[in-house]
Structures are given as structure tokens and as C-alpha cells.
Amino acid sequence: MKLDLLRYNVIGDEEEKKSSDKNEYNLDKLIQKEIIITDTIQKHMTEIENMITVLELFSEREQNKLVITGVKRMINKLLCFLYELETESNQEEPPESENGEFIEKEIPLPLFFHDKTSELLQKADSLKLNVEFKGEKLIVIGFERQIFELMVWMYRCEVNFNQEVDQVDKQIEDIEEENEAQMEIRINQLSQDDQAQIKEKAKTFAKKVEERNGAIIVTGPKTKIDAFIAFVNQIDTDDIQAFYPRFWDHNEKQKLAIIPTSPESLEYLLACEPFLQNPNIEVEGISRVQNKYLMETYINMIRSKRGSRSDQCIKNRKNLIYGNFNVNIEKVCSSNDTGIDIQGAINGQYGRGLYFYSSIDACLKTIPNNGGLYKVIIADVFIGNVYSSPPNQFIKAPDSYDSVMPQDNQDIYVTYEAFSSYPLYVVEFRIQK
Image (cartoon, rainbow, N blue to C red):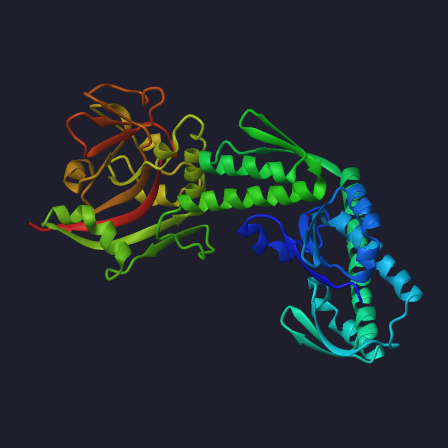
């Protein structure tokens, strides 16, 4: 009679079982193992039960099997003990036939051997066994003694590998302790959801996590801190990308590009929408402005509002019409300085500021007529937290507000800060008489 080993069963919910293959060599996980009760095991049951107690394992007898539950590391030690008993028993009481019966046996194939099939075939060949791989199992044909020797060899290979893995893990831990790092990472420009995700992730990478003035300070192994920084950088990149306009061409290499849009494109039709309200207006051309410096500055301005504004408020942007007699549109669009700036502000019912309009009719009186050709900007405007007010000579938006809007007219928005908008399109049109 020989010791017969069945597969490991990982204890836990279904999700753990699905990922058990990935954790095949985690020696500290809780597992369950079934062992066939041989004559040798029955004979030494008292010693085996004492060993089970010493190793803090739990055993339960089911017909001709012992079901052992506990930490995999301790179960491995128990199995080594059982193999020693079987080996001694085989030496003391040789089988009636030198090699036992000629049989076919099905052996579970541990994940460890999936990359070592050539070594396994070589060992089987040396024992004069025929083997066939069948999914997660190995079909072995030969004499019982040689099959048992193959099983012992397979188990010892796996135990040795687990011990090597354990030693490597310990070496890595020692190296990580010697190369500990600390890093302060500012996250206050990210959304509340992103900040929460980063704080949660920090617990898995760092030994110590602190929060201070819109930043987190992480301390731990340098390799893990570097990986955590890469994770944060990716979230930051994704957050910035989300602020770019819908039709922005990220493949454009020029820092400044004025790109005509096709009248047949969706982009052109959407940009035309405010001008369709007046049937006398004929749009002659729409060009997209891609000024990387102005766009990056505009995005940074919006992100700097986080902490004092809600996430919903940060998303509050509108495409509005801008233009007046003080504005040099070509200079605004090509600027690497201020873009739509207070220098182009006008005095109005809400003080000196930048006046933006949702209706073309509302701003016709403020824009110059160049031989019948009009030119305006469609701006991406951060209106943020809007203050609704009767006429008042503001010099800036009230505290905790970003723009002002007339109580009785939702076609006008006024801002008072540089970089509160971005020149998205230049639109040329004529008015038919």
C-alpha cells in the first residue's frame, strides 16, 4: 500500500478559488488536503495525530481518508513526515511482488510542473513509466513501486521549490528594508474619487501613510514606492486628459495650430449651433485653435480650484461667444502668455470684466464689422460656481464664486480672472441684409 495524495483545495469564497492558481506557492494560505489512509498511516495513527496537534492542524476522518485543514506550510511538513513513515515501512515490509502490480494511475499535476514537463518526462522514462498529460492531470502506466517513486520525486521537487521561493521572498524583504524610501505626493488637484482611490492604494504599497496639507507622505520599500508613484502619475494623466475638449487632436505636434474644420463634420455643426438662431447669419468658416500652452494653463487653473470647489462645480464649463472692439482675435489665439485676458475686458453693467454670450444676437453690438465680415471666438469658459445678481460694478466675482450672471438674463456670463477661459474656435460670418 502506498501513500496517495489528492489535490489541494483552497478554503475561501469563489473569488479566492478562481485566483488560487496564481497563489499556488503562497505557503501561508489556508488550504485543505485529503490523504488516503494506507496501512502505514493506520499503523502509526497515534504518532500522526500527535504531529497534527504540534503543527496546529485540524483533521477529520471520512471513511478511508484523512481531511487535513491548516496553513500550507504546516501541511507540507506533515506530508514530509508521512513520506518518511512510508519509506521506512517499505524498507521493513517489502511488497509481495518486487514492483507491485502493473497499473494505470491518475495523478493531479501541480502548477509547478507546467513549466517542467521535460524534467518530468525524463524522470518517468528513467523509471520505465509511460505518461500522458491530460489537462490538469497526469496519466501514468507502470508498476506500483515506480509510480510511487515518481510521486515522491514530484512532491519533493515541489517542496524544494516552495522553500526556494520562501527564501527568495525573505531576501527581497531584507533588501526592501535596507532600501526604504519616503515620498510626499500632492493630490489636492485631483477629484475626491481619485484622492480616495490613491489613499486606499497607498495602504498596499507603503508601510506608513500620512496626510498633510493636500498631500500624502508614503514610507516603505523603494521599489514599492516607485510603483505607487507610477500609479499616481497615471491617475493624474487620465485626469488631465479628461479636461481636454472633445475634438482636440492629441497627435498634433505643433505647439500652436489653427485647424479649419470641415462643414460636413459633427464638430462644425456643433460649433455652428449658436449662430443658427439668427437666420440672417451665414457662417463662412470655423477653425479650431490648438494652443498647447494656453490649454495646459487653463486646465491647471481649473484643477487649482479643487479643495475649495465641489467636483460638480469643477465640471461646470460652457462654450460661449466672445469678442469685442478691444480684442485682437489672432493675438489672443496665438498667445503664449495670457490668451483671453483682462486687457481685453470691457466696462458693462457688471463692472469691468470679460463678457461671454450664449447667443450671437446678444454680442453683435460689441464686435467690429470688417467690410461685412465678423469674427468672434467660441470660448471654453469655466463658469464654476455662478453668482446671480442684479447690475453691480463688480471688480471680481464674490468670494467662493467664479463668475457672475444677470438675474434676468441667462445669455451673459462675466469672469474677472485671466485663464478663466480658452479660445476654442474662431468663427467668421456675414449678416445677410
